[in-house]
Image (cartoon, rainbow, N blue to C red; front, side, top):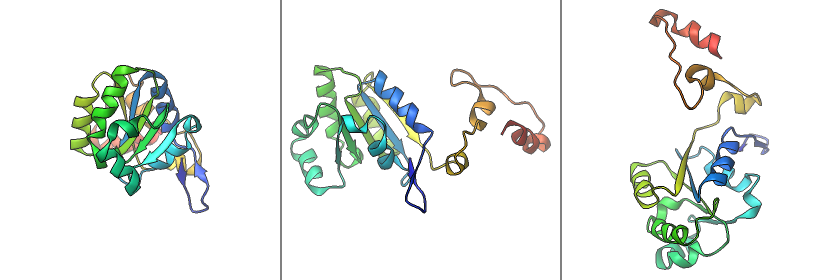
Amino acid sequence: LAMNTLHTLLPRLMTPVVEEALRQFPVVVLTGARQTGKSTLAQHLPSAGDRAYRTLDDFDVLDRAERSPEALVEDGDRLTLDEVQRATRLLVAIKRAVDRDRRRGRFLLTGSANLLLMRTVSESLAGRVQIAEMWPLSQGEIHGVRERFIERMFGSPAGLRRVKADPGQLEQVLVNLA
C-alpha cells in the first residue's frame, strides 16, 4: 500500500508476498530503500490487526529496545518492529524468543536496506527468517493494473527465462514482454 496525492492507499504487489512469508517463517524482514512504503505496508497488511506495532522512530520505544530488548520483544503475541536497524541488538532478543517459540508470523521487522542490517539479520536469524525487498511504487501499482513484465522477462521465481535478441532489438523485446 502506498499513499497517493489524494491520501488513499494504493494496493502493493508485495502484500501477498509478505503475507505468505508470515505464514511460513517466524520472522519476516521487509527491507528496501528509504521512502518505498515499508512502514505503510507493515501497518496496513490484512494481518496487521493481529500484531502489535512498535516503531523505533519513537524515542521511548528505541530506549526500551536498547535498555531491555527482551522486554520489548515480549510486548505482544505477534509483533511488528519498524525501523529495526536503529537497534540491531534487538535481533539477538528476537532470535532467543524464536528459539523458545518458533510459531510462524511472530515478528515482522522493517528496516532500510543496508549491508550491515542484512549481514546482521542473516547471521542472527539464520533459518528463522525470510527477507522481502520492497521497491518504490511501480507504474502498474500507480495505475491500478497488474503488470507482468518481471514474470514475462524472467519467468517463474524458480527459473530464469533468457531472452535472446541482438542489442538493437532489445527495446522491441521489452515492449513485447510488457
